[in-house]
View 1: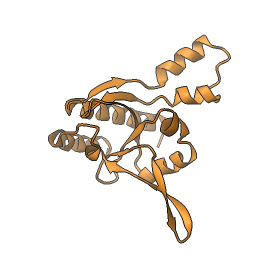
View 2: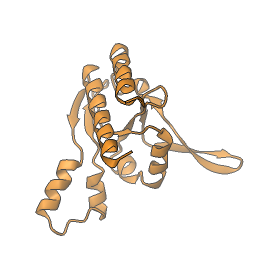
View 3: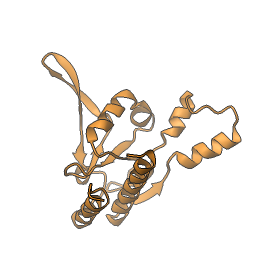
View 4: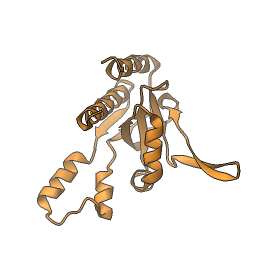
Length: 170
């Protein structure tokens, strides 16, 4: 799949999640690193995206939301056809999102239901299997996160959109 197609699918996922959250009664505010990084790089010649602060800025979560309990939360939205590929990425580099931003990650995946899943920091626990510590990710269905409002009829509509926009037929 071309890089631009992956970017497009990621942007569709962001818009789906934003609309799902808003239509369910959450207050949603766009953040994201795209504009901030562009402005900083233009203004600061010595700015390095690989520096510690550069990594933190480039990992700014996509949204701030205020949901069911009135508590502000940060959300990063990801699209993956295969959720396991995101887990591999997070094993390698989860620090900025998990520790610095303390952001929840919403995954949109057409692989199987739930199509909208969420990880709440800490993203995984280590379980012993055959004497070895194995990371086990704590995915839950988005509608099961008590801090976020998700209406069942709205979720059904958005599940249909995931099937429509991410079907392999297209």
